[in-house]
Length: 298
Image (cartoon, rainbow, N blue to C red):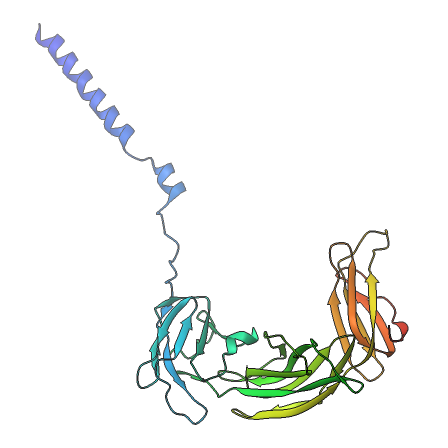
């Protein structure tokens, strides 16, 4: 091979290498178009440890009370103290109960809600939950001069003492019936303001009763009075069934409420005889005009 040929081959090799290097280098145009990659800020996940104490109405710690941290159950120590597992941000609930005290879980509204993503942040530690001794009501139900055996007893609260504050209205979960002598007794109730209602071929209620923790109210006499039933069918303007909320309002201000089923039907039973008005409402529809009803006994 001549020197001239070797020089030409070397020149070609160098040119090829420079072309490969140039291809591997980013162009100015690409660099300007893409720019540096900036990752979005990462929000730190807030997590908190929840702790507190369980006490009675006098402020005495309750040992071995059960505390439900969402679905995790823990027990209090001799000082009534508890500690929940670490929770991530979001909504969580606390509930507590112990033997010998009213179990507020039975109210359906007795749990405490805690929002860990609230702004400003709520207090995370030192939650104090108060349990109170239960109350009891008992008495008799009669129809005329005769005892009403097998009458259904329902206890409705307009307010009750909760773990930290008063609870909204609710119906106590336990339903009882009168014995052969028309007697009844409902135990384990929370302290508060309540009304006892009895139903069997009629309806009767006690006056509102206020009971403090640990109190008992005996000797209630509830008289059943003749009642009526009202069957309601709600339809849309096109004639199809409508899942509506129907309300009966009496001239005395009492109100009964129900929700129609998939066929647009609902039935009120045990309605005291007298003057009532019926109103139906449904999302996306105008409410009906109040329809007067003169309800007579069965």
